[in-house]
Length: 270
Image (cartoon, rainbow, N blue to C red; front, side):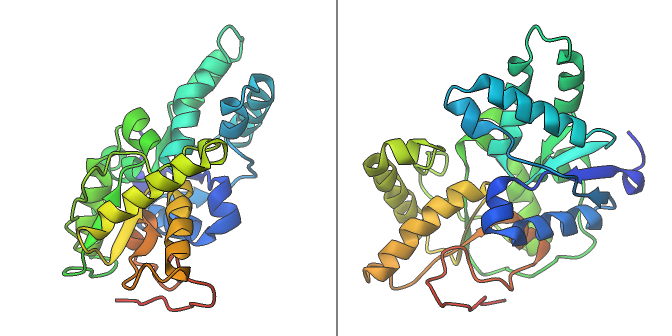
């Protein structure tokens, strides 16, 4: 591996970050730069997961190859999402099974990492000083399905939260259980998805955190939508701030939480 300071890292921002929460992309880039990487953001599109999950392999293969070409020439590709990272690392090779491009696809997939895995496992990075001090402000963590089961992401974000923000995670019950988003699952089975989101938020509230964080923005948007509906109905009196883990790690908390009510611009910085 090249020396860490000379690593050329491409940021794959993901559709939810691009469209709904660009702050996560800025926080991810800031963390990579703190770790000594040279960060670029090549032209990009959807990773193809939606098409893949809805039975469109040819369309997904076209998207995948375009990404592989656009992200060539970098030492690593970093994704602030276990879901998109899992799609690329584990499902792209299957899409190209029997295709002469498979060796190039596999070589590409081997250099794609989710953010916390890259910082903790690949670089072994520890910040010289904390980016913010959240000691004494309870944080709980939602383990998203793809990140946990496809990429083995569990200890990495927790270790980084302690190193970067002085946080010891307060574990909620059933943290590894799905929040109900599941991509198109929440659209096909809205009643089940709604109940699963309610259960997840209840488990989070049971440990009285200030922050509910996770590594997949799509899950957090799903939970934030449920949280906002509860606020509108007067069911939540003490709101838990929902944020992507990159925001806490980078100490970038100026933006309102993802579940801020309409018109609520308070960032509540520590």
